[in-house]
Image (cartoon, rainbow, N blue to C red; front, side, top):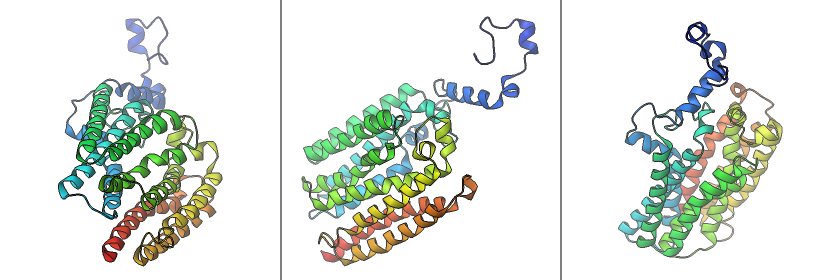
Length: 334
């Protein structure tokens, strides 16, 4: 309450006559109350708040790409082992999401897009989130090691640590390249799924890693263009905030071209069949085509950023369909 009251406080009469913070400074008051809610839970938490900590929508994409990486492998593990491996990857993704929200609770409170999450809204305390995330992550790695192999468990542990320490703690608050380098965290799942099935790394899972790594910048920058005010309010150096809208749009187009080349590459390299190759070429052409209106757009207000919103929506569908085509190609060639 320091922005509103003098250091010595107010007397009883002064307190009755003082204009309320909400009326005097409505934006600042809302911000202060929201930030304080991140550390003082107002409502009892339930299982839905813990589930929300795991970022379930992000987890669904992680699980899907991991499953596709496993199904694309030349050998498949027994059903129980395969299910356990995918479960471990899901738990690890949830742990990374929980630890990310634990660390960024104050930042989330300052962004409209994330202010309703369990920690900034006050439904959950930070210590619970920390214990939940650490426990879930440790359990997933130990179970993966017991169920599959040491390499898969090591990659799983590396993916959690990379997302939490390298991306969340180090990169995100310091550099606009946070998404570029941090994209490696989201690229691990298909590689881990493959290694859980085979016990080794080969060319195709490394290309799958590269595809997601190169897909992440245009996917996330498309989103950041029309929510850049949130990042600016939280002092996060996302590319549209630091380099401007035009530079971000050029970067989106450039990464779309490189990603398209990586997506098609498994076919001419003989790692997949024509079904995947044609699907990858068509999908990637669509991605690049949608990035062109983004490049040409000069809008500065979110309401006029329809090309960016279309690209962001398509980018999610793109990855799902591309990896589904990989599995279908493997089944057709079996």
